[in-house]
Amino acid sequence: MDQPLQKLRVAVLFGGVSSEHEVSLMSAASIVENLSREKYDVSMVGITKEGRWLLYTGPVEGLSGGAWETSGQTVPAFLSPDPTVHGLVALTPQGAELLPIDCLFPALHGKNGEDGTLQGLFQLSGIPYVGCNTLSSAVCMDKAVTHSLLSGANIEQAHYLWFYADRFPVAAETIKKKIVARLNFPVFVKPANAGSSVGVSRVETPEGLDEAILKAAREDHKIVVEEGVRGQEVECAVLGNRDCEASIVGEIGASAAFYDYDDKYINGTSRLYIPARIDEATAAKVREVAVRAYRLLGCSGLARVDFFVTEGDHRVILNEINTLPGFTDISMYPKLWMAGGLTYGELLDRLIDLAFAKAGR
Image (cartoon, rainbow, N blue to C red; front, side, top):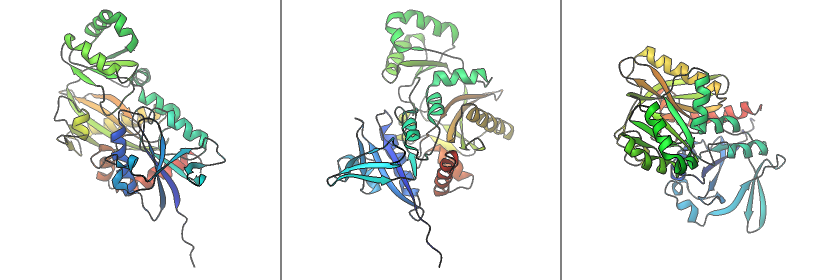
């Protein structure tokens, strides 16, 4: 008689000390709902906005709205950095309990989740994990560093400059003069380390710079200013380790002045076009640059690469790379692979397989 296959023990981590905490809850709910219970024993580990780690044993419906945190169905827990533990330590009323884990699946976005901090802990734990390693996560999270590396590889980007936020109170006029001299308006003012368009402003005239810079400075210590690009916003999903592949290209039809946080997760009024409304030669160029940037920056597992396709001459301009893109039911990353023939569950299986391959297992 055939023996039943042993289920893999997968821990999905969500929440986090981040401005994208709520988005993470939605992503985690979608992931947990779509992980096969025939293949996986799933543990849910939430990190509060204050940084507390909690093992949640309630229904997945408690994730999206945040009810999990006050449900009474949590116990303190943490991931051990000791590789001989190879799992979580839960602090139950009966004492410390060890929960072995085979694979970690982070569903955290932004600071303290997508920037290499958690990935360093994962590496210490010795547990295979989904997504990029510590260095590539940190590099892709910091838009100023990403810009510099991509420039060195002659990958076209919007014209930009960056500066430390603490320079602005003492050198505001000098910084604004540099922006006006080097960049054409409108410009986008962004925190270097944030996602989901949090802290981002579109600025039409120099008079709007002060407010936009102060807004970005609330999110990060480094500010990036980019020249606006007239064209279509398109996105490409990349899947794999060194041997990776690019999805078909999708397009964002933003309903706001740009594709901001409300437009992505609250209003739901933007339109997604899959495939994008571009010719095949341009789509092939997007896919080629997406894979080249992914490999250059050392990505593994997954990333969503965002571009502009300019009006008229159809130049492909890389905007940014997201190493833990949204995984909600309206997010572009899973939608692109689903449009290519993968189910959501099959995509999750592939990501877990890639985590083991990256770990040499």
